[in-house]
Image (tube, rainbow, N blue to C red; front, side, top):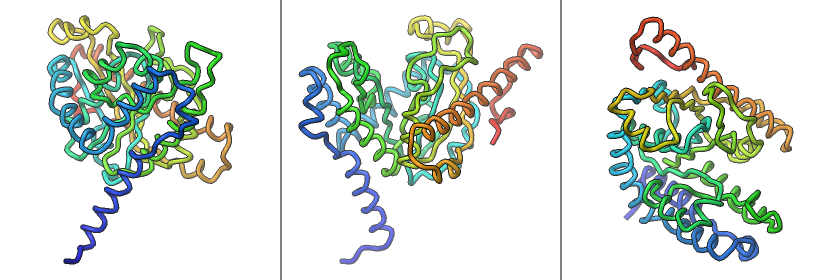
Length: 312
């Protein structure tokens, strides 16, 4: 029995996807982790492969996105969905977003699952010091993230005497492969690296060069995202859905073109230029949100997403 061209292409895509997820760290790379970190990583690594990943993606799409919708449907506003539909769904997609609350990417993921129909495997790289080295981290990753808080990065942890950069090199290698191969891979990334605690939603921290290195190395599709209106207090956030809390605004921008940067030599300078460019595009979406909010305040009525488009 022979295979058609489409069958062969599909099988090759599956092989590439499987290869991405089966990249494992060396014994040397794992040796820098504590026993808790090693255990948490091994479990989470397994949960992000094969049938386990498909199961948790189903839970994410059904239960996770469902309860987020119930907690936000009165105040959720989404702009620029046409940009998500414009990207190729046969290649990985890197979403780069500002970082102001614990729930930014949870809200974005609910929008992806409920308002788009293409295949998705979500990965959210995180600092390992909570999700991978505390007793509470693994249950939170399972129950709230469906194991998608992965891969972990450990450098800069609480113990400065333990150098974990060796493991982080593995995590970057894996992350680059997830961004390079795998139909439906969606990677959520915060270029700022940590939460911005300013009261002004239109201010940003200096982006880390790591996002530039990732983009330069893997050349994924990249869509900027601006998120505002989320609270770090879960109870207040849920109650606000029925008591008239601040609207949650998610703006998706047009896919970014990095062709001029790909021609430059690898190095921190190029990585910083890419990171600054990415952050400038997120900030542009923020300015669109500011203008929209000002317009709404003048008219004292919300403006429908269908009448306000993120610029290309």
